[in-house]
Image (cartoon, rainbow, N blue to C red; front, top):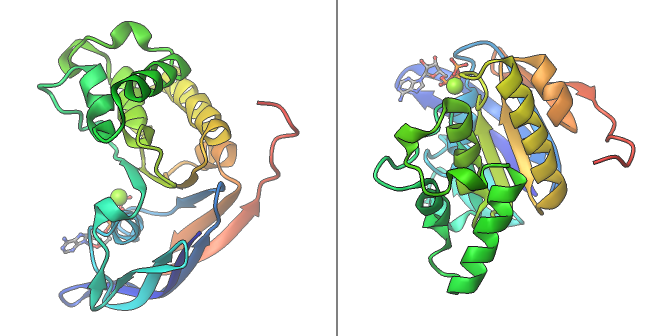
Length: 225
Ligand SMILES: Nc1ncnc2c1ncn2[C@@H]1O[C@H](COP(=O)(O)OP(=O)(O)OP(=O)(O)O)[C@@H](O)[C@H]1O
Ligand SMILES: [Mg+2]
């Protein structure tokens, strides 16, 4: 569980939000929509430990992660991050990009994890290609696999589908849903689009004027996967 309690963030004299609170339960997908500039990316960066709150605190699994005078390193948070653009390492193949975070596993376990992930995303045939040799939709799938490969407990996605056309968007949404079923992971999913968040999220919030309002309780799909 990630708990955000009364968190405020300013940039100089610009107040992005203050007194913001949100709980992200284990194994649940929480979506946040809201207008440009309302603070969605700032909130994800605070959760990831890339920024420090001006007041309030964030705990992860009951442990203090962020406060004005304490910042647990991003690498110690068990968090994976997928950005709007895939940001793959250009000098590494698809395989090497995904294996990057698995250096501490024995060779056979790394290989098994890699094969499973490539199969789940239907991109086994791309393993030996470089990022410039695959499409944007494929690259975004690789970025997602790279983020979850080390089995983080939490995944943050910041408008990951906004550069994709409708077909690729649907394929990526099914992959995200499959991954939520298979992995022991919680998700914070930021998007402009309610149609995406309705498909993916257990709980959706609208972020507006510095406040988060729950907009819907979407029932879990009835046993199908
Ligand atoms: N490093 C920074 N320095 C100063 N102001 C910043 C900085 N980063 C963000 N801001 C400001 O903070 C506000 C929130 O930015 P943020 O990127 O979190 O918005 P967002 O909701 O993610 O927007 P979008 O939907 O366009 O991605 C904006 O007004 C932005 O200009
Ligand atoms: Mg943003």
